[in-house]
Image (cartoon, rainbow, N blue to C red; front, side, top):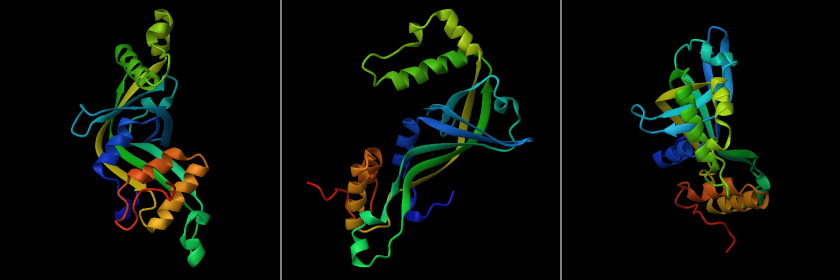
Length: 217
């Protein structure tokens, strides 16, 4: 991944991204070429030296059956949004501005381990469910479904574990812009409903001249 120094994500940003993932793209190189699947993942910091990403694939998905050539890659994404040049204060000063895209992402490399084990898969499904249902007013539990139905669903999927060896992470959040431009982008994002991306900009380490608040009181 191309990571200019001012866009390099710090350890805190990377950890927060991994601990609050939604879905990731699992990419493997095989004898058939590149294979990719989007799947929900959980980060388990207790596995290996850098933790692991855990997920599952449909049993009918050939990706888990194909031997991996080299390391596997999972692309984990945080907030992202289009940035209009019209939001920059410097547009009115000199007009030398262009559109861009702000985003947070991590490329996670490691060894892919397959778990063709109903108990392992069922345990993961419970963890994934509890993680995503936690914010619900009336959380759904795996135990709300008939046991035989759950067992049948578990037999239709296979677990995967990406034991992390290396992480390349980038937080491109206007750190190369002036304080006025940063404030303009935050306000523009909020006006267009991209509140998560705006909040990420407030928490990233901006240049000393940029500051983090928006122009609004």
